[in-house]
Amino acid sequence: MNTFKLNDLLHIRQEDELLFANNERSVFVTTRAFGAMQQDLIENIGINRMKTFFFKYGYQLGFDDGREVAKNESLSLEEKIDYGPIIHALKGHVRSRITEKEIKVSENKIKSLRFKGTWENSYEAEQYLQNFGVSDGPVCYTLTGYASGYTTAVVGVDVFFKELQCQGQGAPCCIWEGRLISEWKEEAEEFFSYSKELPILRELEQAHEKLMLERNNLAHVSKTYNELTNELLKGNSLNSILNTLYKQIQLPIVVEDSRQHVITSIGISLEDYESIREAFTESPGKKQCHSKVRVHSFENGTRLQTPIYLLEQHVGTCSFLYENKRIPNYGVDSMILDRLASICSLLFLKEKTEVESMEQVKGHFLEEIVSGKYTNQEIMRKADFIQLDLSDQYHIIALTYEFLNRCDEKAFTLHNKTFEAVSTFFRKEKNLNVLIGQQLDCLILLITEKQVGQENIGKTIQALLSFLKKEVNNALFFAGISSQNSDILEAGVAVDEARSAVRISSRDKPITLFSDLGMLGILINEQNKQVIRKMIRDQLGVLYEDVDQNKFEMLETLYHFLEQGGNLDQTAENLALSKSGLRYRLNKITDLLSCDLRDPQRQFQLMMALKALKIVDHDRMKKFQLDYM
Image 1 (cartoon, rainbow, N blue to C red):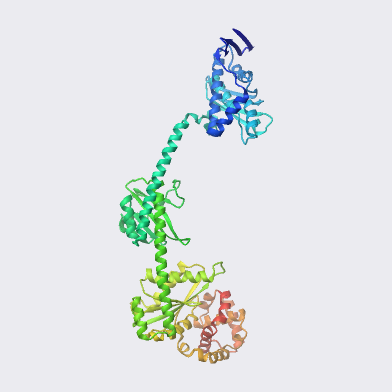
Image 2 (cartoon, helix red, strand yellow):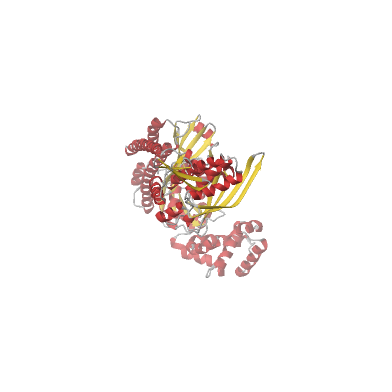
């Protein structure tokens, strides 16, 4: 038996051709073999598992050495700690040196511990550089494990060592620091997490189980979606589709429009749903499998909700309700809910297409009525096809719009939005059968008196403008209402009346009845426009000649002054002017017209001229009006 004493700390002997170090059977391993193992582990189990694997390996090496040193009662605690770097170097791992050392002991217990030092020629960093190149972070996991295990065994308290810089990162040497685990907190957690990790085979089994569960869930969702799609292809209603889904999931289902009006529901009454709707509060932090699905909670329950989109516009929501503490299966239920939203979107698209087709037919029919293409009998017969009685008295409404401010929205887009909103208002809000025709600058509506009922036509159109204000942004809407007509063959005349009336409408008075025009409405027609323009010129004089923005402002000031019966306070408020600014304008107008604006006869003539100007020269005035507004 041969014994070699490297120093007092390491005794190597050979017995029966086997190698022993400090009476423990040992083996010699080259650093190249370690590097090969390091490379294989990273490639097969990943660097995160490799970290804890090597840390645990180094920790056990250090703990065994520290436990032997701790048995030597002749050494002080500080001497035992100092032997750690020496043994580490004797075993060929690294050249180690302690540069800072601080230990606080109270009542024979270590309260605080802090070491700092360096490692040079780390075998672990050397192999990493050869196999992988420069690392983004420290790589000496066996060394930190050894230092942690050794010191823990010596001092009897859990200690963790961490690299602050590493040769594997390209640094000239490794710099490390050691403290009690309680001082590192979560920084030490990942290296001690090996005790919580599953074996790879068990992890693979769990992954396989999850994949099988996921496959079964997808199969279930796919089967449900196919059944819903089949119902859709059969042409069945939304209620029928929800019934099919309800039989499978046994959950209350609610579908709402974008204004949160319930379209249909199953498994819950409208009264019960309204009673819990106020209690919905969004639950933050829930993990949903689909980003569009949101979770809301209410007393004794939960709601899963997802939006319905149609042509990139939000048109409604679908919801599942979980009452009596029933817990949602977020993964599966979210996918089913999302597919229900897709089915609803297709149904809404079908409905939208049908409505648009019908509205186009009705609009074309109105155009042909106005053009005088049909006889009275032909009109009545065709109106029967769309369930509309045109033998009743009716009104024609001209609806125009103007941009509220400069925006990127195209006039064509705004026109389409307005048409859809008007159609929705009469179809869903009022349940009226109305003919809507489209012209270049306005919409033309035909509404029968019998359908309006006790609510007169003015209130109906006022409700329409209020609805449009909420539904369509960036626009002001104006309406002109024709006189009441009983002969459908005179629809063309009624259209002219409505178009004349709407030209008088303003922001302060957005709805104008043709009857408000008085005799002026009767007098103005295509044949006498030149005579009317001469009357305007005679009354307005220089204000009518070569109209520019400044003259337009004076014309608008005069119109509001006369409309308010000469009331300065009300006129100033309508024009957003100070009273002194209003007086200045009125004095200037008086000088230009050389007349007394308080003379009742003169006021009447001027008002007639201004109204006539708005009607016969509407297009010319409109470009100034946009800037003025």
